[in-house]
Image (spheres, helix red, strand yellow):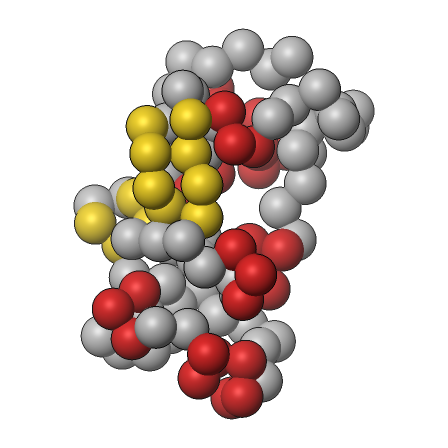
Length: 100
């Protein structure tokens, strides 16, 4: 696996739009989860609320310019995303974005 510092997450957003199964809570504390605005949390409270496959906290247009509306308090699954890892490249490929 080749990780890349050349991939700009703010010009991508594919990982946040690829699958409604990805933004699932795992190791977050109750206190950390309580910081997330309720409008971004799924009804079952198991992860981030999605609109289709897209996380509701993603703002902007995938592949052009994006930002996370809860970046400073984003869940662990989002913090673990690494530009250029297998999941990143799979999501980018699904949107027809080049890998570098």
